[in-house]
Amino acid sequence: MAQDSDRPPAVSSAPSGATAPPDQYEIFQGSKPEDRDGIVSTAASAGNNAAPQTERAGNKRPTITEGLKTIKPDDWFKIHQIPCAREGFMTGIATGFVTGFGRLIAGGRIPKALNWGVGGFLISSLAGWEYCQSVRRQEKAAMARVVEVMDRKKAEKWKQAEETMRKRKEAKAKEEAAKRWYKFW
Image 1 (spheres, rainbow, N blue to C red):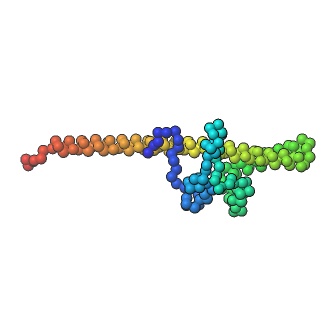
Image 2 (tube, helix red, strand yellow; image 1 turned 180 degrees about the vertical axis):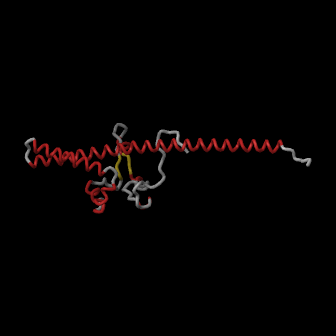
Image 3 (tube, helix red, strand yellow; image 1 turned 90 degrees about the vertical axis):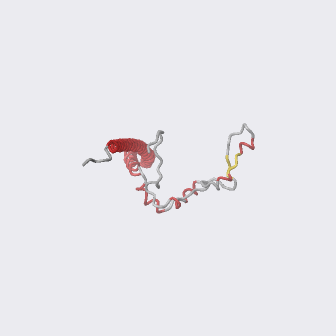
């Protein structure tokens, strides 16, 4: 049925592009309820004026190197499947080329022009990816609203059809009641 809130309807299926069943997704440390039992608040023990901080009892914070170790070599061959990656890279390549070439033409040395080109590539590819993601979020919200309106219209049509059927049955019942139960010939 249609929802009355402004939130988009909840999706009950696996995320798009998912290749494994939900029980085979990678679960990060501390995401299970039994892992969170070790979180202790130090604000309560330090007094009321202390800022709330949490520590993991027995768990250390993950580092960047640990995060980089989770990237598999096979992941580099799947970059084209990431939403908005192509748009971001194309924007970055074009902007990086124009920035580096413009710096070279303006009288900069080659290494400095290359640095400007790489910097332009990184910044504009990130900006292009973020812009594409925001457009996707807006489209997803618009589609959720369309689905909600369609569900509401479908429910209204179903209600009208049921009402029509009920009226027909009542009219038929009145007709049957008005008929005589006997015949003369």
